Length: 363
Image 1 (cartoon, one colour):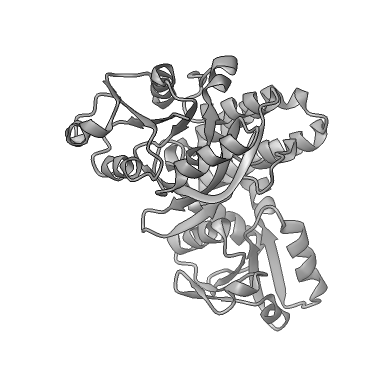
Image 2 (image 1 turned 90 degrees about the vertical axis):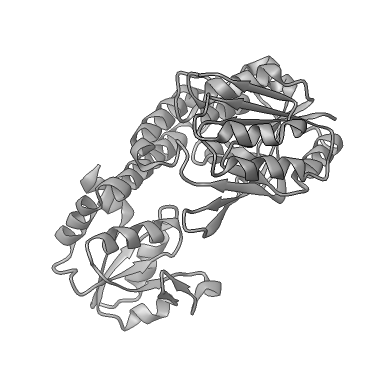
């Protein structure tokens, strides 16, 4: 099989070399490499020229956005399989070999897997997609597949079209839902496919509000096809509120802190954060921005006990049985379970709020 890899770039002088080198280093060799550049002015083109012999096609011209550029790449591609590694992404050396093996041994039309999300400080977390072969409506309407890990037969693009450029940020989500609702066979590869560096158009703070609106519009466009429509509608609303709250955490943290102050009598002495995942980190940054101390993190994951996040210890929930003070439940998917867990401690010295209560007041 020939695999076409498309890289879209614009003023990516600091990152594109790593992307190109990760394609060059692949253990699988039948690769067609395409770069679509939006007429960069920062030295990106000089790096592309440096590796010209490893690149099959280069287009350098203005475009109507990232998805317009991706569509140009799709039209150029002659491979049996198409994947996207944009200029702030890079693959593991055996990624394409694993993808080809999967397509050769299954009836998959679209594969996806695990991706590292790399923060600006170099720290990283995994985004897993869906860890089962059969993707359910409830999953795909609530979460986004890590796009770097997605590889698709070219015939899928020929049958269902490319990206809708009316969406500036979430056209890949629209395209995945279009594929799913038309019965395209998704297949999960239980392997780390590559790394995605945060800071692109879909993860910049200023675009989170637009991302929330586009995601909600796209989800509602396809939900009529679902047998579990009521459940999906609730999940769409929850996802929308999550993005809105994320936007406020990044752009107006004081508004969230004011809401917490309204809930508790005095937070100046500090807060405990229950949950040390992505939202635990975000709430820590919100509190830190206004100098509200975090006493410690609490997590139900026993592997995290005794470790540190932001230099602060993560402890067992058992400590809350004798703790006196305020707690923010910084999780979304299991908030009910954790609030019940706190209630069953029967400790009158603790008070808590969760992200849903905060969202009710600020959105």
